[in-house]
Length: 584
Image 1: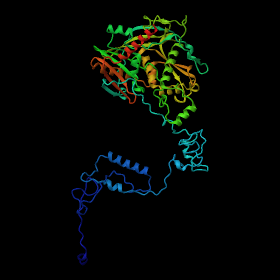
Image 2: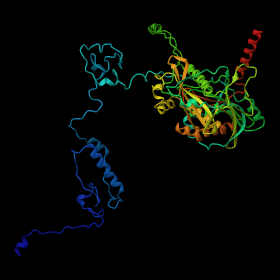
Image 3: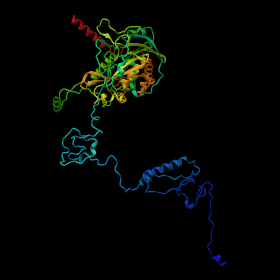
């Protein structure tokens, strides 16, 4: 009893039971723990290390993402809604670890030296080639400070024999192509849109029906299917042969169809194909549209250049025009020493050369008229042939077709170039020619070395450099309803000779399959035409110009006075009358 009297009294503490989880409940927190931060955790939490300073940064980041993912997936049964651990961002950013480990140098930066660190005859910057990027042909000395043998090897990408980033792409001047037509002060811009917007348009391809056939068709010569670099054929000039590029308003057949009210929209395959391939175009162009009493006529100016074929239009390094006379005496002296520069590879000369090649190729691949090569004459003769002229019209057929494009009836004059016998089936075809002018400036692929074994690589390069031209040819073949499209590969006999050419190879394609191969969407082609027709139909009667900007990928529609472009025609007529009077 005495021991019990002297013992320290023991008071049983109050134990609060939390049936929902671990730790004290929110209603009965002990006084000494009030306002003390507490991070709740669930019974299903995985407990790991509190801190690990030896793990890699990748492992730590991975663990962080895993914890965040587990927190998002949790249903929230163990979440304390009354209190959440507060995160102080400023405090966390002030905390950092000091990494004393040696960092491993990057793979491609070892041994790289700055331009001022390379001395003597090193192979980096300022090395043996002389100049910033070096040259495999240069033999000049290196840096002015170095007399011994240099040790710079990190500049191999720019030095002798390197194939990395060089100055070639950086020295390509930006060409200001301006506009294909001079915008007058009285012209009013009624619509403007980006070319990228045209790629989003789409409509179902309309059904086509034939209205008129004019001209003639000859049979294709099958021997050109076997042409190769070993059996190449020289390209011959089509002597005494006329090619006509008649616009819509000057076509007597379209004029007759318009009087009969056959359609509400009129144009040619050259104009419609240009609009269909507009998203791929780089060079400026313009199309004249006249609206009268609910009828649209897509026309072109007499001086328009889009009848000429473009060359390397979509290339990263397109042909450059001739530079002006140099003003610096040193450059002028250097030019005199090198001699006059040739202008055979300017865009204008290359365009004329490509057009001439295309014309000659389309006539050369035809068989001479005979028993095995009948000439198929159409119901109507060539509407543009001149009986009094000495030259005969080129052998081709004009096919006038009607397309039911929504609420509009579109009339188009299309061209077919020949017929081909495919295992007894006589099919209609179109023919076009790709030309090689200088492989050093047009993709770097020598056709004579690759055309037989790697024709796909040659076509891929041409698709990169001439995407718009190939798209226009494909659109023209689809408009004409051609069963086959013939592509010829024609090259110069010599790089400096733009007058003599040889046929290296030919290839047949089905137009719609080829359109898929070059990623040309047929529904998008017709969507562009339908959008323009619907838009122009909402305007008042008058004359409009659809023009592509030469610098920006923009297409603008201008409302122009009715007499626009008529003055130039009157001036030409006056000049012709003066010449005739002088000759008399």
